[in-house]
Structure formats: structure tokens, C-alpha cells
Image 1: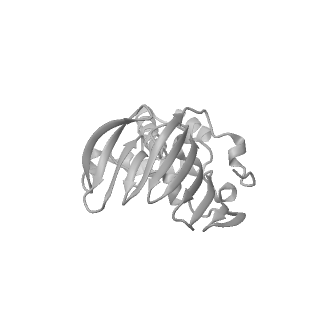
Image 2 (image 1 turned 90 degrees about the vertical axis):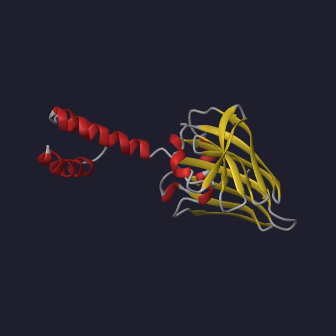
Image 3 (image 1 turned 120 degrees about the horizontal axis):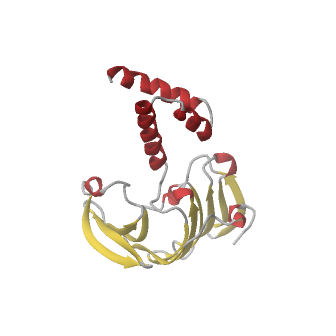
Length: 216
């Protein structure tokens, strides 16, 4: 068993360096049973870690109130690996931002689009080298109840757009929110209130939403 544990990382390295998942799967089938089981478990953990949200796909609309006013529409699929967000928000009387963020998982086809920024028309888009923070859809640390409890107190559950969301309040900041499947369906971040008003099931993000040249 000790020899197997020493050899397993090398086997996994070779498997992952060989190419796509089909190649890996073919090589697993040729492995001894015990090794195959361990490799399959490892691949399953990798796949689970790749899931940013606990739901595969959907479209969510949000409204802002309080210090900010406006709206936001979110499309996502592949458990949050791909996300498109349209925001039309008045941060103040003069600060009006109308933007679109497209994150497809690689910088060549991901964009930050600005239609209006600080009240001025921009109509420009740039490749996003890093995933924008806004596409993570949560102010809170991702983790289980034990992990969240280090920084937040539980507020109980409530229904938001027919989803049972769990409430959390920061122990050190004026922030509270209700999370469902890794997504904040509602939060109050120091006077900025964001709340989901609808959730629609989707198979995938519509192709026209992935076009950075299409305004909204």
C-alpha cells in the first residue's frame, strides 16, 4: 500500500499530462482495480472542485436599492465556470455604470464591456485577463457551515425566488446576506441592498449573450 501511495502521484501526473478526459478515462480502464478506484476518486474531487456554484445553470435577475439603485441580470452554466453579467446601476447621482462582464473560462474569449462608465458613454470592451470579482456572485467565503462560522453568524433560512437560502451576518462588518448554492440571492452590504427577483432554469448561456459587441 505504501508503494502504491508513492506511485499514485506519478501515475496521476502522467495521466493528466497526456491530454483530454477521454484519454485519462481510457488509461484508468487499463489500471489495476485498487489503483483505478483511487484515481477515479481523485478525478471526482477535481471535478467537484471545479464547480463554483451548486447548480448547473440559470438566469437570475436582481434589483438594487439603498445607497445604489438599478438592476442586474446574470446568466451562468457549467456550474458557474461560464458567467455573463449585465449591470445598469446608479451608484450616485452622477455615477451611472452600464457594463457587461463575459467570463468563459479563458482570457481570449472573456470580456469586460463598458457602455456607460461614470456617467459617460464608452462603448468599449477589453479582454479580461483575470475573472472579475463580480462574476463570483458572493460576498461570502465559499465553504461549509463550519468554515463560514469562523467569520459569520447564522441568521436562519428564508425563501427567495422559491429557493431556500441560508442567512449569514459578518462578525466584523455591517454585511448580511442569504446564500443559495454558492450564490447571494440577497444581501445588505453596508447600505447597498441587492435582491433576486426571479430565477429561470436554463440549459446554457444563450449565444447572443456571449457577444461583446452586442449592447443592451
